[in-house]
Image (cartoon, rainbow, N blue to C red; front, side, top):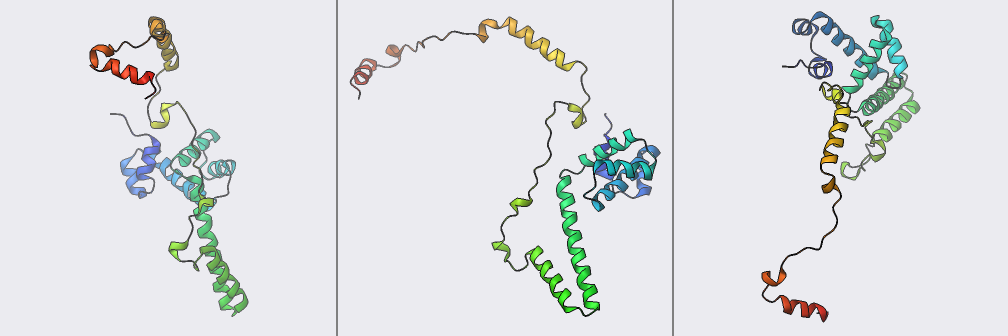
Length: 212
């Protein structure tokens, strides 16, 4: 039975307690899960960061080589089926937190003007003045998932078959040559023997000739 790959393991146990990871997996694998968890959280806290930023932080925090850092980046993006949506949701949550914090500080200073502006911004951003049934769907916030077409089965955890493309090409050439007469067939008039199948065939032909 094949072993689960690292992406499947992350989906299953990325946020499991450290003690459980150490008991369930080999030390190196458990340590990698903890590293991936740390960087997963880092991405959520830094939604506008670039891939280069991620790699730099990972190399600095965990002392890994650049190649491994990019491998980890690919894994984290794979377990975030909608990475851009996650970042946007975090930014919205952060915005609300900032507005609420501003309101609290203004209230402590009894700054009613700032309190009013913060409350207005909060209400407008969250559209609390609109009835739920009247709210339009946020089509402008729908993010197209970054799908990339590939014929590489390894993304599904399936091992590649060496030379598979050449083998496919050979089989197509082989069977195309053997069935060339089938691939290029001339049109022939159908012979349905209408006179024997239909008793009133002659009557039908006459009606067709008259345009009825």
